[in-house]
Length: 555
Image 1 (spheres, rainbow, N blue to C red):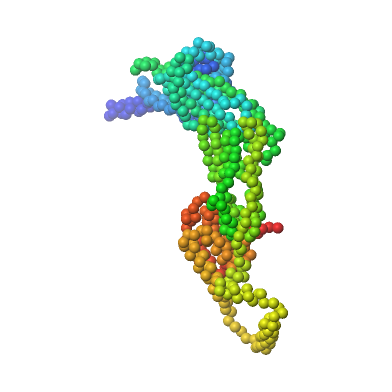
Image 2: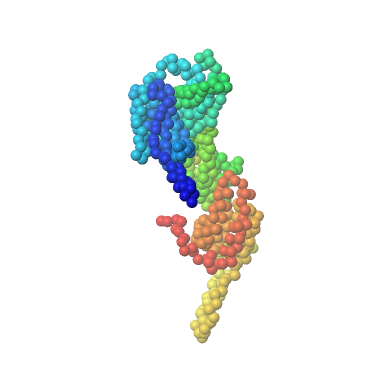
C-alpha cells in the first residue's frame, strides 16, 4: 500500500515541478553603431514572453531617422524542459531599415513596454567619403531629376527617379513620393533599359511622376534611397547589404500672377476647347433636343484640377447637361487631360436663339503669358410651333372648322343669329331649372369620356414606348402631360404632378440617354409604358397635384 502511495506522491511532485517559467523582457539592437549618411541602419525591437498587440511607437525615431521599411510583427515560440522544469519562451520582433537624416552623434531613445525599458543607443554618422561612394557605385546608383527648379502653383513638375544596378542585386524600388501639399500622378509604371556609365554597364529602372504643388513658396523633394542585397557569383558566397541615396531638390513655387484676370487659375502648356454637334449641321425645332458636345483638352494639368465651363444657359431653350467624361493621357512629357461635356439643347419657342460665346482664361506656363480659349457666339433659327393645349383635345379633321369659326366677324348676320339662339336657349334652361322641384339623387361621380384626339395621342405615346423610340416619346409625353396638367412646363414637372417616383426615374433615365452620347436605341420603354398606363387608369389621382410638389419657378 505504501509503495503505491509513494508513486502517487512522486507523480504529484514531478507535475508541480513542470511549471512554466516566463519572464517578460525587452531588447533593442542595431547592426552597427557607426555608419555614413548614405548607409542604412538595421534596428531590431524584440519583446520576449509577453502578449503583444499593435505596433511600436516610432515617433521619437523619425526626428533623426527616415524609416525606409519595417517588417513584423514576427512571432516565435519555443518550449523546452530543463531539470524537470518546462520553459515556455515566446517572442515578438520588428525589424526596421533606418537612414540617418544628418551627420553627427545621434541617440536612439529607449523603448518602453510595460515595466520594461530598453537602453538608449548612441550612433555616430559620418559623411560618406569619396572612396565609400565609389565602392558602392560599383554595384548601385540612384539618381533623381526635375524638369524645372521653378513652377507656378498647381503647375506641372516632372520628377524622374532612375536606379542603376548591376547583376545579383535585389531590393525594392523607392515608393512613389507623397506630399502634404501636392498632387502626385504616376506618368509611367516603369521603363527598363541598360546603359554605360563611368565605363561600367548598368541595368536601369526608371519611373516618372507629375507633381502639382498646391501652395506657393519653397517646395522640397527629399532624397530617395535604395536598400538591397548583393549576392556573390558563387553558390555559398556571403550576401552583402548595400544602399545608395540620391540628391534632394528645392523648387520655387510661384503664386498666381497679379496680371492674371481669369476666374479659375489654369496653368498649362497648352489649352484648347472645341465643339461638335450630333449632326453635321444642327437643325433646331421647338421641343426637339440637339446635342452640343464641348471638348476641353489641357496639356500639363491634372484632370481633377480642370473646372467645367459655366454660364451655358440659352434664352429660349432648356439646357440639360450630362456629367463630364474625364480621361488622362500619361506620357514621359507629362499629363494631357481631356473633359467632354454633352449639353442637350431643347428650344422652347420658334425664332432665333443665340448661343453665347464661351471664354476660358488660362496661363501659358511656356511663354508666361495670359491667354483665352474662345468659342464664338452663334445664332440659329428655330422652326416649328407647339400647338395650344386647347387644340390638342380636338380631332385633326375638326381643326379646319374651328379655325373657320374663329375667323367669322362679329358683324356678320350668321354671328347675330347664333348669338340670339344661344341667348334664348340659355334663358329657357334657366327657367326650367328654377321651376324644377328638388329631389334627392344618388351620390354618383361620373368621369368625363376622353376626347378622341386625347385617346389617339395616348395610344401613339404608348406605341412609341413599345417601339423604344425615345426621341418621339419625349415630345409626345410632354404634349400628353399638358392635356392632364396644363400648368406644367417640362416632363420633370409632369413627374412631380403625378406623384409617382418611378415615373420620375424613368423620365430622368430617358433624358439622360437621349441627351448623352449613347444611342437612343439603348433605351427600353416598356417600363415607362406600364407606368403611363397605370396613370391613365387612375385619372382622379392624376388630376391632383402631388402633396410634396415644389415650385420649380420661384419668384
